Length: 77
Image (cartoon, rainbow, N blue to C red):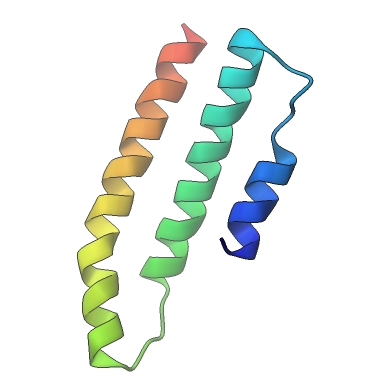
């Protein structure tokens, strides 16, 4: 597990329960997926194999971000 993943786990508020915990979790998923999409879009990678991996992974990350946003929108209702 990398430092960002560990930070995410550490930042989850275990004092919350139910809908409050769910909201915190989905907000964190949106923020973390957006952060990764930004990193992948802004890459300055020169290695062709790594560039290919990033290009293949970016659509999946965007889909996950969209799904997290959809969950976030449902929780606001």
